[in-house]
Length: 247
Image 1 (cartoon, rainbow, N blue to C red):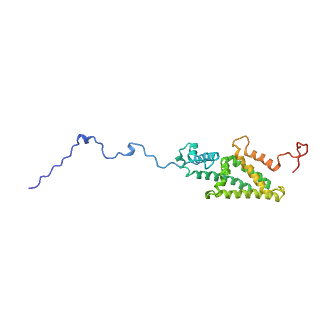
Image 2 (image 1 turned 135 degrees about the horizontal axis):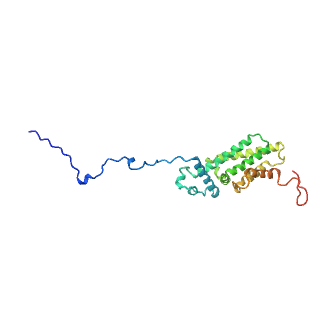
Image 3 (image 1 turned 60 degrees about the vertical axis):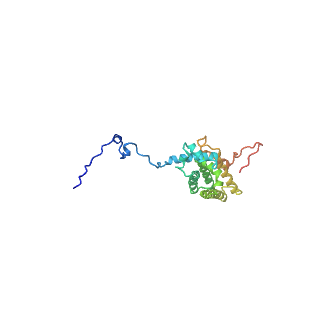
């Protein structure tokens, strides 16, 4: 006797399962906005320059070793961790600040040295370029003066030594050329003069304020008048009544 086929029955939903939501997932776009990208947009060059400007101000005011990433971030209006999105360390910031300053300085110096000027005109142009760089990079100049002696011992900042050597050759060579052709006095101590001019020009970063009463070109003109021509008017009377000696 054949077995009687069993009738298939469709189970009816119970009250507990009738209202249960479907296990099939609902497309994400139908219920919520797309997820935000996991990577941040690229930083703009303008924002990077602004962060470097802030860092330079803090380094110049507090010193490199005393400055923390958190302090720079606070001054820039960022969380400390956000600053690492732009720079991997405060050393990287310092490196870029100094390298940018020196690159621009040498662009100006190289133009002067290649112009075929006489010794006096070359000194005048180098001094003017120096004051322009103080105007553009006052904080970087202050950092360089304070930190370079320590930084040159680190391989990453080896270019500072190279720049110092080029700087010395440019100034000494011009002064020596001036002595040789009679532009400057034969008894001039070239190395002493170089150190005097170098130090008195660059120390201006400690008091110069961009946007002040005098433009850098005017300061350079006044400075050159004192250094190259002397501070006394030729033929002026001394307090004792005698004439000032002519040079």
